[in-house]
Length: 298
Image (cartoon, rainbow, N blue to C red; front, top):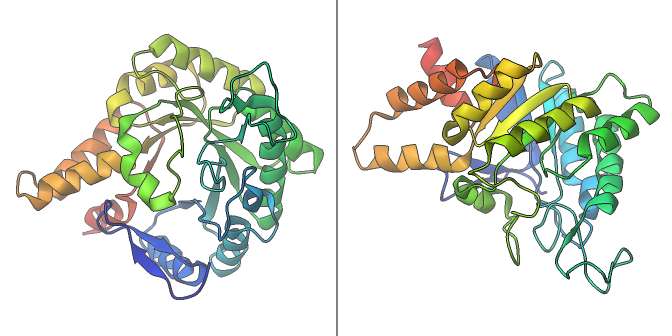
């Protein structure tokens, strides 16, 4: 929130936290370069146990969606649909705690409650669609998230809104810099309850199959470079548009090496993006988008 904010993210060179007005200027700039879509992550003024800002019509992301669609109508706006940025505990849904209405004594304290989280994901997805989002991208790896969001959207007449599911999202060590960007590190434990074991390929294929059956329109693999085999396997098995997320750690480690003079950044960045494309990605989410578009246009 606020105005005129362009706050550098120390661990991600050239990346910023934006207020809505400066974000619009950035969206206009990337549109001029031919970048077709943006994905939004929000930092609310206040966080709470349920991530209320995420399903508030006046929340930071719904407000940004409306402003961007008004300023750059043809830009595809993807809404990342998760709760970690909005909760005071930093997890991706409702946590089993004694003071919460959904407290379940049979489950451990600190356990993520799957089904109550699905209800909130549906509510938030409708709010973001009402604001003008073109694509909802659930990223929490919550069981049943695609089906719950599809049902909520269809029930409110948003059957035309696509779902890009983070269908194979690993509990990766490559997310570190992004937690600075989104101010969303877990306050306890980690996210291995609901994200996947990096050693497990078969689980990824099972999770993708479930999301396809629930109505996912697009499939996402995250991170990208350490999981090119997963990306290639998904692309070979399913005839759905497939995306890969080149995450903050991938971006930042290339910058760190380039700053030391160890690599040629444009060459290595483009080689990395090419490998993701070669493995089968139809779409790539990357912090190099603006740079890559500039390099390709030169």
